[in-house]
Amino acid sequence: MLKRLVGAFGPSERAAGAVAGGYALASGVWIIASDRLLAAAPIDVGTLTRHQTLKGWFFVATTALLLFVFIRRALERLRASEEKFRTLVERSLAGIYIIQDGRFAYVNSRFGEVFGYPPEVITGRLTVDDLVAPADRPVVRENLRRRTAGEIQHLNYAFTGARADGASIDVEVAGEMTTLSGRPAVIGTLLDQTERNRLQRRALEDQKVETLGLLAGGLVHDFGNVVAAVIGHAELLALGLPKGSAARRDAEIIQDCARHASDLTRQLLTFSRRQKPAPVSLDLNATVRGCEAMLRSAAGSLIRLDLLLEDGLGSVRAAPGQLEQAMMNLVINARDAMPRGGVVVVSTARGGLSGKPCAVLAVRDMGAGMEPETLARVFEVFFTTKGDKGTGLGLPTVQRIAENAGGRVELVSSPGVGTTARVLLPLIL
Ligand code: ADP
Ligand code: MG
Image (cartoon, rainbow, N blue to C red; front, side, top):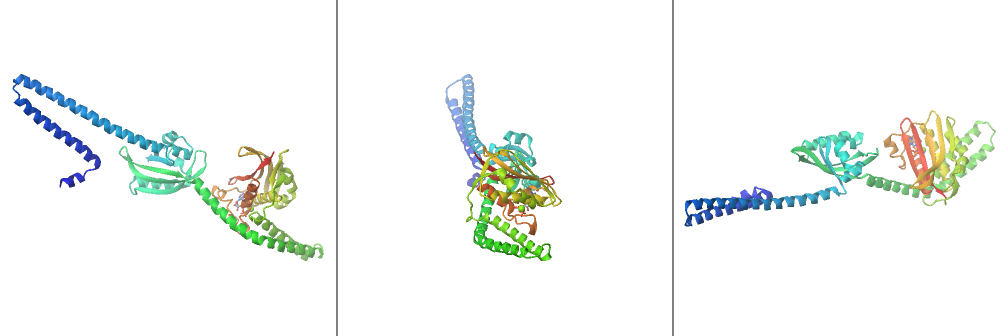
């Protein structure tokens, strides 16, 4: 019976009960024993009263001292434990937050770091919506509501966050329902998974490219020979036919198609590990001028192609033919983005790459531009929005070429405004 009663209380109640019970028992024993002692003493009533009063004061002093000792010890333990958890929370590698009424009641410094704000700005000024990409706000709001309403206790999910600098980040949160000042709140941890997801995507891409490279390496060589034979024979055929005849035009179309096939073959070769042409030192401006005619013909009659080349730019290191191929791919994309014609600017300039000077080869169009969702995927092998007309190999090829030359590609695009592709290439000093 007593065991059941004791078992019904928590550990804090039991510890406090033991102290209070011990105190009551000791006080009772003291009162009874000291009263008996005084009553037995041969003293007059006046002295007895004085002794009783003294005994009372002694009791009060002892009780106060005991209270002091116990409360101090309890508070010290509390403070030490709070200190421990505060350090854990403050130094945590995960973001930690408390949300109440759609606002942050607390965030640790890692949480601030993930979103690019000082923690006090988040707790003082921002709402939850401010840190969530617009598309994901309804989901996040609903998840918060379900937890504060007590519909679910615990929830773990991922969404796209919005950083102070406008960048999107992949975050994962695990939140619990709790109470703060007597009202419902959500407490949880948050992880920035952007880098992990990027590496995962990249690994997948590399795998695709590896497969493509193996396939290309095996097939492309033989295929190239076949195409070269087709081009050669179509040329001979055309030469033997009267100029302007329908048959000669057909023969010329065969040549064009075969050349196109040969371009595609070359595209595939960039992914093959067997054919890695050795890089040489190249004058970037001369390279651009050298393929100007080819770029113009690729751009077609509806496009005006402007060259803006910065003088005295210097040389870069790339495999012969690869920069031309990269420019071709970029100009063709620019052309595709402006089906009704427009201006494409091919420019070169000085820039910076990881703190070192570099050459920037840019192709700018005033075409359709891209939504962020498209922009995020353009370097995926086989990603195309052009249906059967696209191969999805153009930009991945440009990226490989830039990387082979020790550089990288940046794309800036906004829907309805246009796109600028910048190939950054380290300069040879
Ligand atoms: P493809 O041109 O065969 O589709 P790419 O790798 O060259 O493959 O391009 C991938 C996708 O990126 C295109 O389908 C298109 O949606 C988008 N894109 C590339 N360049 C541009 C551009 N200059 N303007 C608008 N969208 C572009
Ligand atoms: Mg393309």
